[in-house]
Amino acid sequence: MKNNDILRRLRFTFDFGDDKMMKLFEKGGETVTRAQISDWLKKEEDEAHKPLNDRLFATFLNGLIEDKRGAKEGAKPEPEKQLNNNIILRKLKIALNFKEEDMLEVFELAEFRIGKSELSAFFRNPNQSQYRECKDQFLRNFLIGLQLKYKPKD
Image (cartoon, rainbow, N blue to C red; front, side):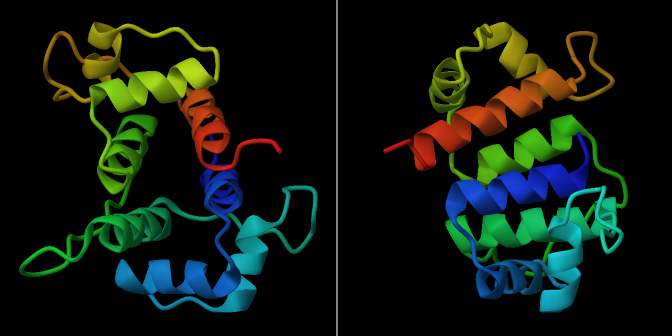
């Protein structure tokens, strides 16, 4: 999945306004403008669309973690220069303070069946034989489940 799509879905799910989005980036260590956020949120077909790079998206996710969990002692974590779905899923898990059961519940809300061992494989060290790459369909269904959990249809 593209960073812009994930950012758009998170904004909708948690009902973040522009000011809140700017604060989340700032908490992650980056100052961004309302215009930048607007360009990142535009659909790809829009000529004003700008791709959101991995480092900036990692900054946003770090800011989300700090916003939801509080600031950690010491220096702010450095944003990753390269993200993958496993890292994004881990950062969302941390930000929302989810345990394994919470994650499985979110997948269940999206009517997506996943086992405990399959889920834990996403959070393993990539050098371990049990490590599994988090494909787009898993992340997409997790985001759908989050939306159903935090922004249920009326």
